[in-house]
Image 1: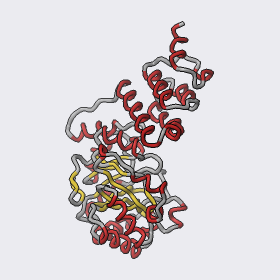
Image 2: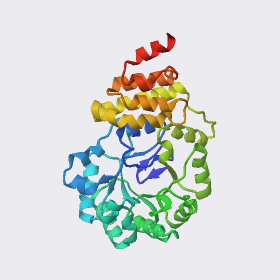
Image 3: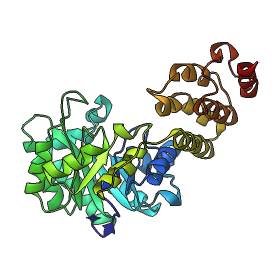
Image 4: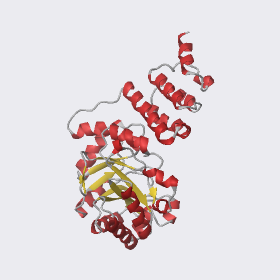
Length: 342
């Protein structure tokens, strides 16, 4: 698959997710076989005004290349300048958010609001295209009404303005994640434009990737929520694409991935912030597994990355199943293990 002059080694793309697709998470997705990872959405205004917090969204690691940076905004001049900043920091691709329906974003005229203003959308995309040489994509929703006409129009405007590919999550802006994604709209966009179309929405298991490709003819498949705590979905889907049976990750694979996630997070955020973040994130990797509620109860009490790694090792080795971890708090995990053999 090619997006502009950027060749991807497979059609699997990580969907941008606010608060989730930070650098540590992107690294896991990349290691699992994802061809293109995308940052969480970045404020164009924040970039242009030099916000340190906003600029941190663009920090990357060489191992996650190619990397797409997604920005949102509504002012053509601001978006143009933000695009230049993205290019200057070395992103491989630039994505424009046309799908976010959070009230704060809509009030600014950004995200999905641009789909109601085709003239402004065209002005924004032309300004960006004139300013950068990066491959350019847009990610949109169905629009504000279910017919899909707004999406078709936005895709055609994007193609006219020199956008290199369009990604579509075929739910309306007001749906959120309720209801069902209308994959027929992906096929409709594929018939409406000549640039690559990337499908997104309701990919819940590896088989859904092939199903979406077969039903819609899309060029790429973007995976979002199904990858949370399950980066292996990329490797599994790739196996199916290449006509190989896939396997589920065993305890050792889950253990190693979770340990790497902690390590990447400590290195990226610093230990104090990483530990606060990991208290909720580590639960992703144990969801649905035996005794995961005990694990969650223990994790929230831990205060260092080392303690978290010990807890993860103990859990996946099956060594905390009978421990009264609710009473141990951040007690040394070796003592918990000893108590089980007494």
